[in-house]
Length: 207
Image 1 (tube, rainbow, N blue to C red):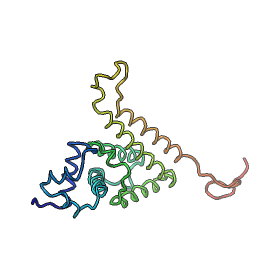
Image 2: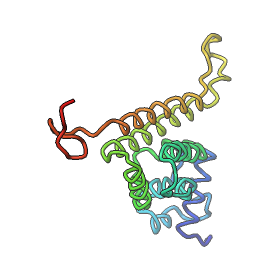
Image 3: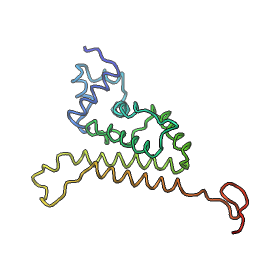
Image 4: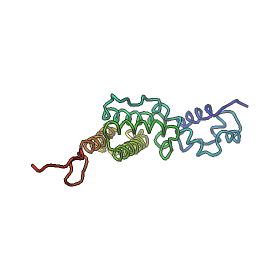
């Protein structure tokens, strides 16, 4: 029997994903690939869902290894770079968006907190920072999901000749810019204050 460990199982599962696609990944196929009996995989993962969760986390390794923001960084440039890194990582694996969708990045919570702290320190309101990060994440997953589902459709003989081919990267960049512009606009808005007071807390004087 081939000696395996958890990391080898996940690595081979991701390679299998790239070869056959998410719908065809199974513990039976994986066990055959590893040269082990199928029940032996339950030593590492009790259910297929547990395996998929581990695969999703491992697939995010390139994005998780990206440098965290530093106090001197421009938050707008970082927001763009962070979202682009996420998209690039999803595209590295076949059906990467489907694999990631619904997963909980338990091993990435500390990095997420540090990213949020950076935005808050940069002057982005907390509620807006949270919603912008969520919106960018879901927009990216949806964009990659559509892009990966559309792979090869341009060569489909049944495709209408007058149907334009979508430039997925350009569409993604346009949508990302809209999200960033909205966040930048809200960040630049003056903080609401009670009537008769300025934002700095002092009484306002009549002109």
